[in-house]
Amino acid sequence: MFSLDKISGEIRVKGVIDFEKNEVYKLEIRANDKGTPPMDADCTVLIKVLDENDNKPEIEVTSLSKQVSESSRPGAVVSLISVTDQDSGLNGKVICSLSDDVPFDLKPSFQDNMFSLVLKQHLDRESVSHYDITITATDCGQPPLSAFITLSIDVSDTNDNAPQFLYNPIELYLTENNVPGNPIYSVSASDNDLDENSAVSYHLVREEGSQLKIIAFLNVNSENGEIYALKSFDFETLKTFQFQVVATDSGTPSLSSNVTVNVFILDQNDNAPVILYPLSSNGSAEGVEEIPRKRERRTLGD
Image (cartoon, rainbow, N blue to C red; front, side, top):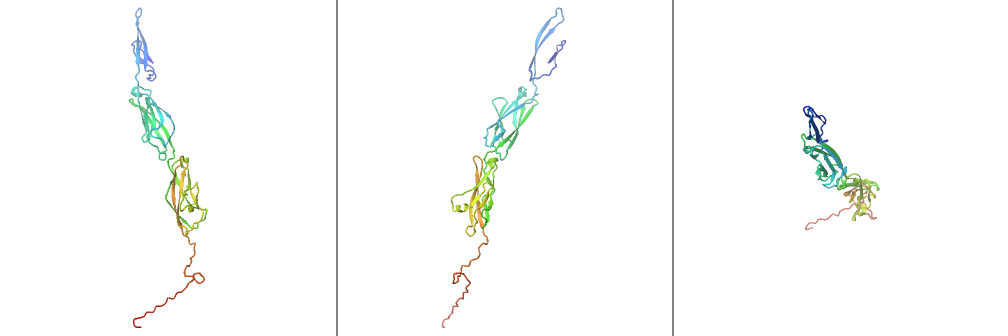
């Protein structure tokens, strides 16, 4: 690693000096004169290598999971971060930071250059389902050196949204004399969750009440929300009624919501006129002309 000028005693560097490989070199040097007999002397030269900031920090991530549930509480540990720098002193002192606008934070551990990536606030998968988190490690050397790594974290779904109907209540205008068994309307509810948490089924609310007999003639397709009338309605008998449809998702626990449907029966011209008065001798109504009787007017003295 070194050379020695045997005349001047000058020591020069001839190899590549690397502080991270060897911090101290010990040279044993002997000086001889040319007398008779020759005399010599020995000395030890210790060469200490001064560190330069020539190494970037290194980041190692131990991911507990690449997915974080949206039901996770703030403070939950997502990943463990280990940062090393082969330099020494301030050159090896590392400061870590996260990308802006992410609901995560870095918490230092009891060990130097160890950090925990923790959840800083509640997550909502329906708002943001994926995060790319950039961790930057910068040493305190002059000039400072930096390294970064990007973590991709998906937010897993929790059944935290109930099915929702676009309109509630719904007004349905149905013409009387409808064909029994045909669909009269179709309800639809949407669920912002995923997979089973968003799979919606429908059923009718059949509570005890004055309209229970009417609702008994209704049915709903549990898969697509189509509502069927099993009877033909008559405006002259029933002009309006109300029922409720419930939409339930398949999550655990399941969530549901209902919609009220107000049905108004529309009239058709399906009845001929009937004459009720006057009646003929045989009991049927017929036209009769009535001649009013004149009243006599008399004056005083007639």
